[in-house]
Image 1 (cartoon, one colour):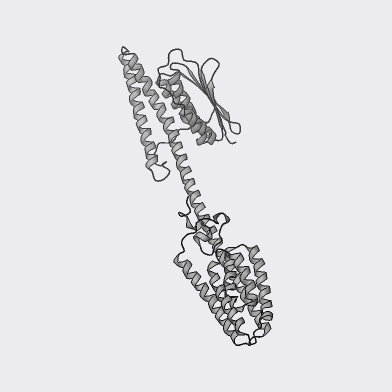
Image 2: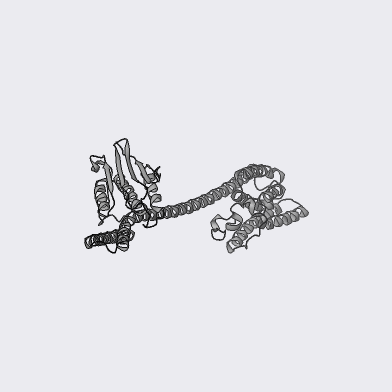
Length: 409
């Protein structure tokens, strides 16, 4: 992020002629003055000059000597010209003009302009210190350079009111500009956070779709691979077995295409994409999954101790289904012909445990190579559900997949 891209984040010397300059920006190349800068400086100079002219005319009506009047005019003119430097040295110039205005009334206008700039550009502490000094000078000035046309009390009250008005106005302008900067920063931060939340939501949606696509399609495509491999390596198989394998391949391809259409429909749907799709699997559909695997030639032993699968929360049952599906898919790929045991235990309050095990393969493995993404997706599913997942090789060289999921009472 560059400063020219976000000018409202610049220090005041760069972005606004009256906002406080940051210490780290001192000594850097100063930007070109804008039309607004010239306009503000010109108005400030004319205001200081007007006050100075009125003060000189008032002094001319007294019995003041000519050299003193000439000195007032020269010093007042220099003070008005110094107004052009008030942004670069606001503190030093304000202190100098306060001291000068004590003895030279013609410098009073320039002193007021410098006080206003000081109140806008600097924090409260230096403003309070120099403001107190200006108040003291405004009280003492009618006694040092009395005006016979105005009473001393009136001069003191007028000076104090002018100083307080200028300081209050300047601090009000500073507070308003700080509020504007804070609101802009808050809006920019809120916009950035909204963008991050949107990106995170998109990432989570992509991850969920990727998990679903892997869990669904990997199961179907593994069936296709297993039966296609059987037809390839057994060209002399009986016609009935070939027909059965071809039927399984056809059904699996049809189911895979249907699942793929559903996933694409989720991506294209403007809403959550749930309407119009087949119901999501639950624990009650675990028997159908096992029957499908048995039909594909996998020996599966199901030990389901849950008497009422419908009582299991839908999200938990769906996670159990996906874990069993992934375990059966991995067994077909990495241990073809081995018997797979699927065990489901648990109850309300104690949680739900699903365990999928298979022994070591009895011969060479010619299945589909795995990428490990399925186990990663299952671990994410279990974590999101508030559970945990464990997997690894068993002592006999087989593979075990075990997960615990919460089941509220």
